[in-house]
Length: 112
Length: 116
Image (cartoon, rainbow over all chains, first blue to last red; front, side):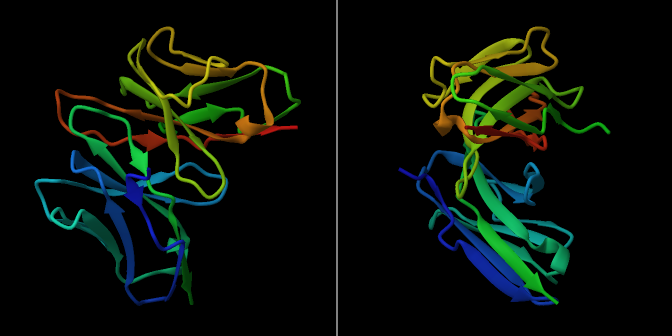
């Protein structure tokens, strides 16, 4: 069973507009969530994280929102830039445990 | 460069051969993780170390896989008698665990393995 789900395999956005990437989870014990960005043939690069005690965390153009009751989080990128084109992974971990559970990723394409 | 490094970046081997990968974590990080990623999937946890102790192994880690972190610094992942199903990207990550707080894992560039 997939505990972290990214239901959109791909997303296309125009440069300058907002990109919204979604992630759902089923394990109510998850309490720390991260977003990673991955280019082909490279390892994932950490973008932003959020603890379950918060509902929003912002870092520059990136904002992550967490809705614990819906077991849903989203990553907002605004404004989107062509260099943001990559695969974005949502990941989660449980308190006291370190292993990350990843979704399958969403490929974002930002066109000029 | 103070990031996580992995060697080699690419490995092609024949079925039945043994392969070994190396990971050098960020120097002050006490935790080191191995993940595997196949096409169309997210990374899947294999095993992790705190200092030199291997604390957890996934059921994905068959008996043909062994990992070590002898001095609590670099780590090696060995696959014996490779099978075509072992073809994947092998990712290493490190983090610094302080108390019981949440931690962020930082990934290396990965080793892409192709078993013919």
